Figure 1 (cartoon, one colour):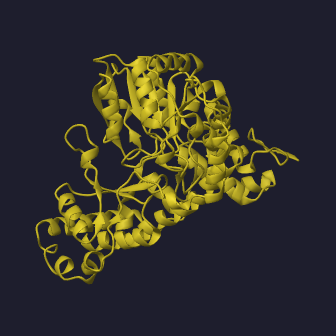
Figure 2: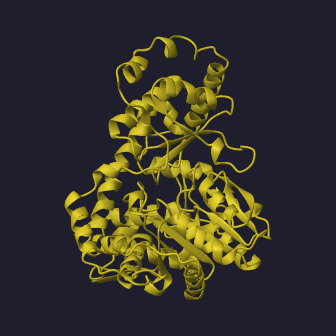
Figure 3: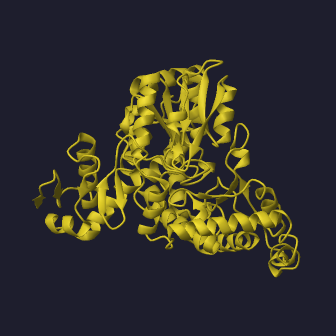
Length: 500
């Protein structure tokens, strides 16, 4: 059955793609092509659903996905409009509004501002010793519960997944298949052909990456893939941009290949394109879930980043480290899909399955991939054949997809528990719609004391300070909820709430 309306939209119930995906794709193309122009009002979800003959949920899901990507803008009491390309498209207020509309705890703009002001004032008092040295830290029963009661520390530092949730039968089956692979005299620098084909299909399904097997190289993880790119493209003294604050190990890898690291500031949405210098050879970015601040790069800024790269000749390295995990809408499409000739995509199983697997992927244009493969051959570098075979089995049998679905539900519960356990402080949480960590921005003078006192209570925290290349410009704590259990997340956040 096909249904037409005045807008250039068609839904096909016989097509394999879900109706919401079909509708979102067509609206996106209509906006990109100019059929729907900036500032133009879209039909209500109820009205469009009626015309198309679909449920309202279909239209709502499509609109939510486009909100998340930055194509749409909601105006309170007025409706849904096409966002303005060339501006940031989603202001911080709009992002907050989108959170409210997607079912997060209700927060008024005035309430958010007041909570923030109250917390800053209260935390400042704590740092001055007005409260932190009193009853809350010296005599509270939780202190004994964590330390004197023999409980292990609650580790809320980011970077590690929940590895206990794997399917033991699928895991054993994968490694039995790996044992059937005969030894290779000289492993293919591109990776095993079967796994490359399976990874290309996985990326098309999970990340909307328009790539085939010839675009995929099998690596040992994102750090390894980044090193291969650096070994191929960077010469000593080349200026390379890295987000500030950003992933410290990426800076280390690039610097080890002779790059001059150029810190590139980020805001709540991601890298600030207008601040990028024109002499960068490469820029490393985490657009799906900025590390560590948690921002997601909206479509307008993605377009500007790629326009900057085309104008300057720079290569954009997209680290897609935990993009499979989103809790409001489907994962945002990879930046690579907007310009496969200018972007290199890095991915890994270290967050979605386990870092112990030691496998990732690099996606690039065929010409660049050939260049990287030649360099890899010269370095006698390879990825383990049995590991590749085991992962191929997980993909071929659908075990990895099932594992990702289970983990999304598990992490979504922990993410919701953080916001709930923090109570009124939950309005200060950033980056909670994706990934395995969130950030709470705080006054600089508060952070060291908070971390110290939390550790005394048995809760280990990370700070934003160590993620800077230069002097810290963003201050706060980074809460990881990958490796801690749901009960531990709740307990740790209760301690943080009390201290603040």
